[in-house]
Image (cartoon, rainbow, N blue to C red):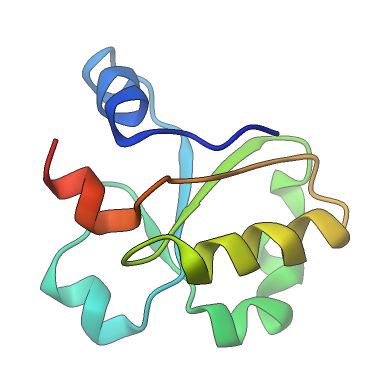
Length: 99
């Protein structure tokens, strides 16, 4: 699945959409600022959280981190685990904040 740009995510949120968003940053990073509605599941804990998110296997999931590299790893991992529609937020939370 193609990645998603911050502009596209902003546009979808403004249209009232509530996509499933996973913030793979550490809890302290999430507390400093986050995308509304994002669930914080740090990258290192993702393998043990698979049962909790199994119901999302066929839904679109947007993953993000600070700049996009940890979330790229999360996307690859989730795709390997059978999640069919995982998208990485290009540029991460930093880019999302800028608009």
